[in-house]
Length: 116
Image (cartoon, rainbow, N blue to C red; front, top):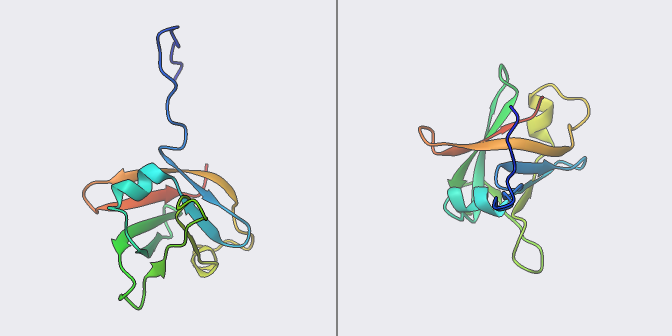
């Protein structure tokens, strides 16, 4: 859908609803999605094979199944690495690049769409 951009429009935050996936299996959340999760120290990772999506839920480092989030030296770019999740979803090659993501209020998780 086309959206008219007026001279008075402010620049939208393009990182607001994206997650970046790298070939090595690193998943980097935008700061807005990290905030939506409640700024956790770790995340639980879920998959939906039918929809080819990854779900991320707030967790902490005491959960043995949680993935600890790491940050760059400026304290930004919350990141975890998990090659296994892509294999579970049937990917032979990790689908790297920016991926659309959204906050699912009902499930209280970030949902990352890998296809499309």
